[in-house]
Amino acid sequence: MAFTLATWNINSVRLREALVAQLLAEEAPDVLCLQECKSPVDKIPMERFRALGYAHVVARGDKGYNGVAILSKLPLEDAGSLDFAGLGHARHVAARLPNGVLVHNFYVPAGGDVPDREKNVKFGQKLDYVSDMTAHFADTMPQRSVLVGDLNIAPREDDVWSHKQLLKVVSHTPVEVEHLTRAQEAGRWVDVTRKDIPEGQLYSWWSYRSPDWNAADKGRRLDHVWASPDIAGAAHGSRILREVRGWEKPSDHAPVFATFDL
Image (cartoon, rainbow, N blue to C red; front, side, top):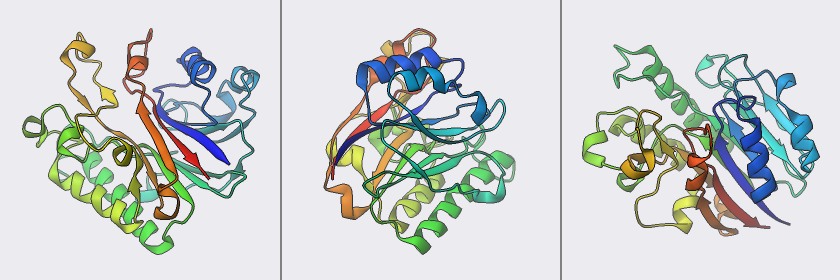
């Protein structure tokens, strides 16, 4: 069963309901994983999405912040959620597809502005969250699994517009990259996007603070698609829909796609 999966930090699913509907209508992924939904589950505007063929949803929500959802044309089995770092936030949900593939959808904490856990509690929470991911996947050793989401870390030098200038900026500091690398290695996860697009600058997020995000192009690749090694070879067709960042009243993230032939 071949399926196409997309991940997108939507920055409020209710505020950007029309953009989600546009993506579903134009691109028609089989599965769409959303982060930062900022909505209780019962307030997610599923009626419009169901009309477009997305009859299945597994989600966890918080009022006004966080929140993750998996929308699907294919039947979904709710596979639970994980509360890493004991934050009590809706930052993870998992669902199983009919072919047995387990999809993990993560929204890792952003970590605030100061990359020092002694001065910034949020940064410490972020590191603890990723450390708990590492421990979990070291214990479970994923098989037939896909991990997607806004991981809020750009690990490679070519995942940011300026490696040198961002070394002390949250999302690209060495300690964050080390933590994410350990989490990836613990589960033997394959970075599908970079497997398909191994060279060159690649971004999925551009700040709202830039008056002309497209011209300035000061982006970061914060959104990821990973696969367990037993199915990573079946992945192909990775792409980031940069143009979505230019839609009216957009999220500051662009959706990331990959197709799996299984």
